[in-house]
Length: 275
Image 1: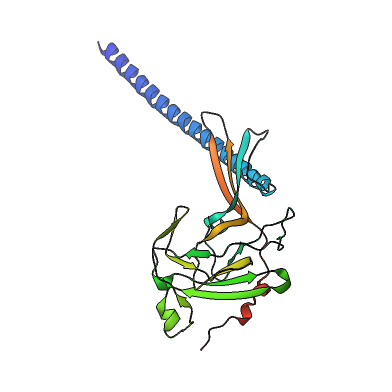
Image 2 (image 1 turned 135 degrees about the horizontal axis):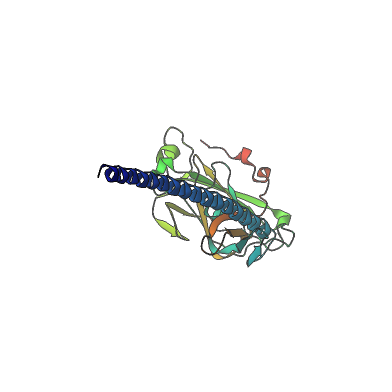
């Protein structure tokens, strides 16, 4: 009986050792599988990102509405959609925030195939409205805007300027910039909400409008009473990599504008508050 009892204890020890060994082995195997899968996903993510970037590069060369796709030897590919930004209403610079004192050009003329403006046919519209401002910010935390309009024809170019500020303290307070005040509101353009809207003076034979945020950054939208020319191209590229059961996607959006007019054309040095 004593021998049998010792044999049973030895068997129990062997079983426990096997269980511990198996548990450790399974744990190490699981960690190895997870590590390999993570490394593979990171590699696929980098491939997908590179493919998306390639789609942006290809899309920059396209000057029309189009959808392009290209596979690569590393099992990655991209699908890119290129859309003209045009119409009676659009988000300036693809809806991205415009940096303070930087500004954007709103083109009122078409561009030639080589990307240069065609000033021979000024804009036939009259009314142009500018939207800006973040609804979550106070009036004095939001931007004021300066608007410079270049009018044609080219033989007798003229420049008109306006400036608008939602903050009374800046317009009529100690700073007294004398910008025209604008009331706040809620204006939804292309799914984006703006706090301010201002209709510009009647535009006759317009060539280009420069809108510059002052005091703060802000998104900007533009609306005309007739169709405005193409302002640029919105490019959305999605890169994919990996198998059907474990496909990794990365996306990149890019807005390609036409070249801006040099700042001296708008004579910023001549714009100053008056008494």
